[in-house]
Picture (spheres, one colour):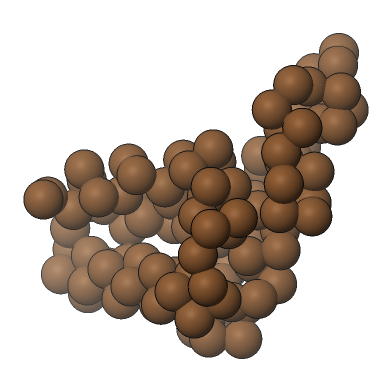
Length: 112
């Protein structure tokens, strides 16, 4: 499996499924692997660091809270920036209430 195909597995919907079914240890390990890949790309001047940061930023807020303690400052900043940008885009939409959309993450590990 290539790096990009693996990163594409971390969509927001996929993260919700992962959060609902996997252990906290597994989730921490996944974020750790994304962080390692991010640093490999940055250090090796490979163009995938932005994609990797976005893959991590697609996680639910609860995953971020459970894993932020293992994030190094540069990776944390890249992930946080993308999470905040995503929230800002949602607020500009006419129907910005994320709880009114079917299948949207509710913050408690379940979907509507």
